[in-house]
Amino acid sequence: MLSKHRVTLGLSGNSFLRSIRNASSKHTNPGREAIPTRFPTLYNPKRSASNNKIQLPIGLVYNPAPAAPSPYETPAAFLPKEDKRTVVVNSEEFPVDKIPALKEPLEKKYNLTEKDLIEIHNLRTSDPNKWTRRALAEKFSCSEFMISVASKPNPEYKKEMDERLETIKESWSPRRARARNDRQRRKRLWIRDAQ
Amino acid sequence: MSVNALRTNCGSASLRAAISAQSQRALASLNSRSAGLLLKNRNAGSLSQKRFQTTATASSKATYKSPENPFNFGAYARSEEVEAIPESLASKIPALRALHARLGLSEKFLYSTLARALICRSSNVKFADNVGLANFGKSVLSFYVYEYFLVKYPRLPHKVLRHVVELYTSLPALSKLGTSWGVEPDSRSSFTRYLAEQSDEDVLGRLLFTENLVQQEPGVVQVVDSDKNHVDFNEAMASFVRSLVAGVYAHGGLEEARDFIHKYIILPRKVDMASIMSFDKPTRELAVLCSREGLEQPVSRLLAETGRYSKAPVFVVGVFSGSSKLGEGQGASLNEARTRAAVHALKAWYLYSPINSQLPSDHNESTEFKPAFIDTGAVVI
Image (cartoon, rainbow over all chains, first blue to last red; front, top):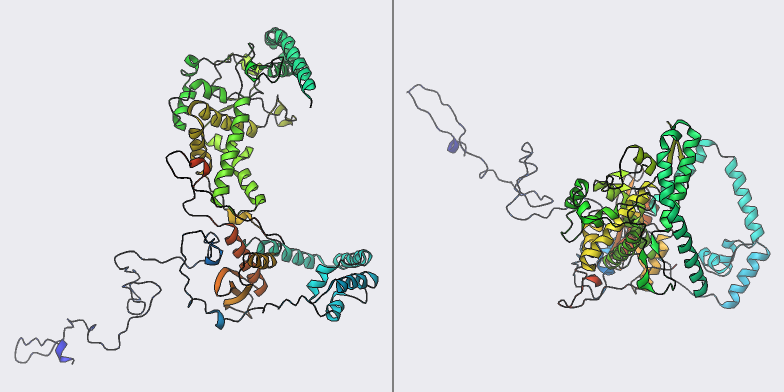
């Protein structure tokens, strides 16, 4: 195998052998495989690691920047029926059945009657200390959010709670107050999806 | 207001204007003659300025003559006190010719119209001002800017749409535009212009107005309340841009005015609509939107994450309706990423833009009418 690539220079009878490497071993080296790249290229990340020049093939190469998607691209589900553009959805990109949900959506029960709602309202306003949102949610087997939609808190109780919260806030150290303030400020950025 | 009240109002205004206009010239000349003497005494100087202001008020009221019957629209006319700018004069002014060429206005657009568009009511010159032009231009401008964005982004909530139109047609925005066209302002009072021995003809081609900032002494500036006699720089410059739109309409018609607005005011600037929008309860709003549109309830799923137990974790969450992705968000907590994903999805809904949409004003006899997309409206939660 090796001798194939060596040329013997026989200048005289007692001359020693000198070897010159004059042929590429590219085609003879087994085990060379194409390494998958993010976009089609002649560049091989392993073999051509020292050659940082990426050789693109001739023609159009679609290689979008690895950035967050833009809200100006309307998702397929949001396109109106009369819109003629077609969005090709690659169903393999996000196999939904294999990605668990962060929060399973709750089944809506619609179990409360008008009578229940009146009772919730009465209980919550009459004895707010006993009938908190959680207690009412347990009693009527619904969510706490449903209780807040169905009734308003007792105004006196709410005022008292607000005052208590203010007292707690006053006792915060400047550092804690700043940290809490910053947290609110960051949340205001979330709802704009701004950085 | 009843018709009678309107008539008496108009009548008394025109009467007052006629009386004051007679005395106006005499007063002005008197003031200018005694100017040299008055300058020595500061108090007396300010007194003379005050008198000048009163004459300015009189001149602004005398710009137009109202007829006896206010509904006789053909009888409204410009007062004799106010002169029209002769085209022969305006076409010889280098500043006007340069501005005309720089803006690429058509040959039909007269130099005298351009000169008039630069004269604000607060300036005390004998020529007609741009108030009528500016008022008309303002309406045309807001109409076409509204039309453009209403058709381009048909789902934008009305509040956002109004804000976007405001960004394009507000005084500071138009003023910035006018300044970028290289319009030179001249806010000197007529008194100062007289001292510099410059007649009304010499200052044509500059933006003429009296600024509401009065320099009392070096380093001290007094802000006078904006009224007809004192205006903000932005207000004056914006009135020029609006008048220019009206001028293009007057000489070229509605089509040209529309093209002018598109070419010079809407298209050169780009507002990032996505950064304007904010949603108080994004997840709930998205859920309501999906149920309204008959889509499956939105579900958030974690797509990628790194450094969960580190100081700087990153989570990428996608929000899905069934198997189709609506939005994607990333954040330092799962809650943040989930909220951002919902906001992203809502933005993607509201920023839908139909392809090849045709503006209603684009339609003419030769083209087939293509109705604009009309949306059901913003989500109510």
